[in-house]
Length: 302
Image (cartoon, rainbow, N blue to C red; front, side, top):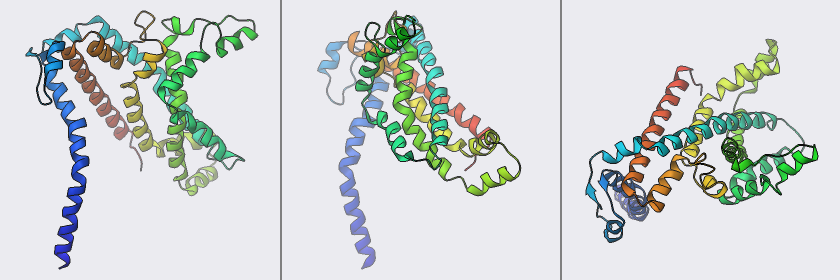
């Protein structure tokens, strides 16, 4: 009797899960398969408009879309720009997140208030954050240039300079995410046994040595997770660019996701856009694999 009741409850569970599973298939798995097939086709706008839900529009084009994308100078430049963003964004986010977590792991007055304040930027939308920094770094009336002029200097045209525009976007991204990753590190720090700190202190280790040889190695697993999340952020950086620079000046802030958007919705080259997406996916898989190997080689600790 009990066995029948278990089977009955399991059956109801599957029935209740079915709508969510159907939505996942329609809005996650199907678009992935569809875009992969489209990446091998030459597609016209009219074919997209006339295509049914399960139709694959266009004429088979082999790997020509992939070849043309790899020969595209703007795509190569977008890879460089995305890499430039990553070089600024990833190390600084990791460093500031860990240092803030270490500082806020102490028993200080008002520590919970500061933790909350640092987390708030993460819940602000990317569009709103971009508009805030657009105002802060405005050439004529921005707060940053106003501070520089107070000390007798002259602020640059931040978002009109091809070497400064991307760092400004990276600074905004760091500001928005550092509080979230700080909380992840904080959770890791609070799980480190106090006996390890005490043992290191008895051995005569300085604060820096305790941080370097006790804390950092024990947070390796969390760092790997954060690196994967940061990689995801790098490979999806679009809204910031769209709002703050529109890819300028001189295509210096055109990232791969931004180029994919333009390729599909402005230039109407859907096959090329799909091919770019899968090249980006392959790059992401390779980087994640290398990250994982490096961490394992260094002996990540639970």
